[in-house]
Image (tube, one colour):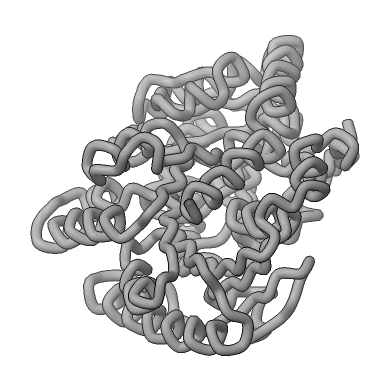
Length: 413
């Protein structure tokens, strides 16, 4: 199966012809990932430029994205350095303080060099409104692109509330109050914008993080990733504490050492917990059964997803993950892969019959579900076909284009 062609993106073609945002000048600020590595924000940038807007971006540097400035696909990207991955209150204070300084510095530079009428802030953290506030005094509009629910994210990371959790709640309220329009990644986030955020329904737009099928390429299977084993399970995503990868390793241990299943797990992604996870895998005697690629280029990512028999999402079931849409689920579906994940509301909405759902946080049940699929290739093929069809019909990025444009038109009204 090959990538979807440009002729199959009618909404993008339509805005490219109509130029509904001609003359608009947009500044997008994203703190936690560089562009164009952040797929969601990059899809937004390409859509806005196709619609006729000028787009500038402020983001951090990252591996492979070290240039302070470059122009890609007519998008002006300004990058800044940040301290290493933060941990603890002092670390986060250093990271957020440095980010705000660079974002304000670069926003002033971009205002002078390019100009802008709209700022789009992409969380986390819920602090980018502080950069937008001075510009609002000069008539600039602020749009909040709601990627993460930060009070729930804080609680998922640290398993507690307290002073800093209350700060997260305050910053969230101030962010919603500052924004004229909110772009939500799903209906759960839209409900939060209207309840906790007090936004009017007509000011909140659901723009899902759908994959761009013109840029995802299904490749021939590369059995090198299997490490000589019969089966392969794939994972793509951040290596963080809240992603539940320790639970996945427990399931892998059960499958390999207790059940004797000849399976290789290939985990694609980088993050602050990568070294700890590698150590856990070694302690479990899984070093030969689990491959950690680190942050990988698209070629490796596409090969892993094309080769895997089953793909997994082991996110712990908590309020954060229950209400969040995970990009990896939609990417698995785009590659026609059957999925195993724990029972979460938005995960089930996205995948429906493309996934099996394990008992929340139950590693044995997850192992059961993965093993069940590995032994039933016909079921895998059926689930994969369902997922691919759902992405093509409803969830790919082309279906998000009109809503994003409407959000910008609403902000300008």
